[in-house]
Image 1 (cartoon, rainbow, N blue to C red):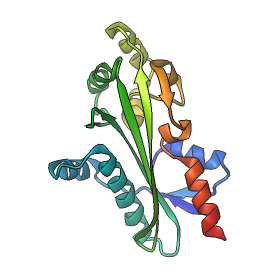
Image 2 (tube, rainbow, N blue to C red; image 1 turned 90 degrees about the vertical axis):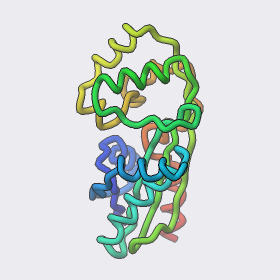
Image 3 (cartoon, rainbow, N blue to C red; image 1 turned 135 degrees about the horizontal axis):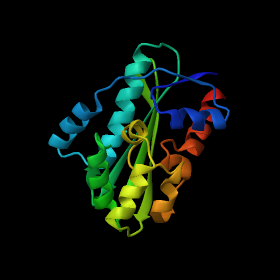
Length: 194
């Protein structure tokens, strides 16, 4: 059974590949900023925003690919229940790291599986992370190691690369922090196949 991954994230595709889940990528092209702004205007919290984005991506691709399972995913950072977006510039990335510096925050990863344009399963995972206390110079040095296109695509900390060194502690599944709570996905797919 081949599933569709409604995400352009190379990390998410690699997680599926590493766990022998046959998948192809069809990007949803959802305007995430528009959805986030609309939900924020309605008073939605980061958890609800993450869940909604995963579902919108999944159902959009699913409606155009009948009888296929489509996996949509979204991850957001929540600092004191404030949504921290992916940076659009290196300067924004630095501002975000300064905000997270020496702070506890949550990374919320939501996944949704749809079929024939409707959600049939969803799951949300929340991981707690505490960033170490860094000087501004150390944060700049960290950012200088990351290519701009990777930084803007995947956000400020790359736990699959050097990002682990930023944290005092991480409470949560590494795969979930990287964008896919894979254990729960595998459990659902195995039940679905029966």
